[in-house]
Length: 268
Picture 1: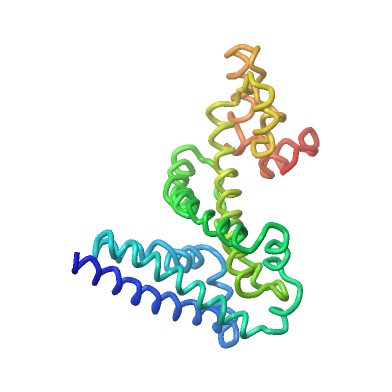
Picture 2 (picture 1 turned 180 degrees about the vertical axis):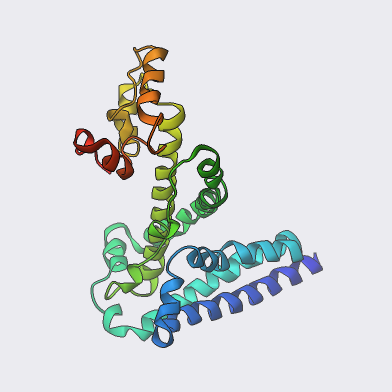
């Protein structure tokens, strides 16, 4: 019990110090080296930066000190977030006293409900990291084996909301969190479009599911075979779409340059 408490307190202190210093470095970096700062806003450097703020401290603490140190790393990160938020708002008092997202939502739903709800959303963080790791290590074999289209990760995995004037402290942290996870989610959906249309270009029997999923998988309404058709129709569609040309999903922009005006109305 004594050793567990030492590990807990040590992890809190070490994580708090390391994350706070890293946050200060990233905050001040644009003043002294804008090109380097911009690199950290896009993959792959962004992946390294966010990992340093999130799971790397968890991993190190868990390996070195076990469960109590792992918990301490979480508490240390939380403390660093609160301290940095207050510091950043003090640096930008001209915006802190003006209109802000946090003020509106606090007034609308109540301060404690707003803040508790934000912290609850962090339960999704490991899930988004799992998706991101799969994007990094799980998709490139499909490019090599099946000639799936390549992507520049930085076009999807980047953050830019810190450039929005007046977005500071509390609002900035949570908006950057959304900035990152929205890119991760959207990129994952884009990769999955290629998987679905290549292997399973068949519409669902459930019309409501088709309508819902078509938002993220537009091929449902742009080429997938109707459920009352035959396997011959499925194979014919696959021959049409994949015998020649890119092995991308049906609405991928690359197909517009090959299929011409017939598909010029397909959304990218």
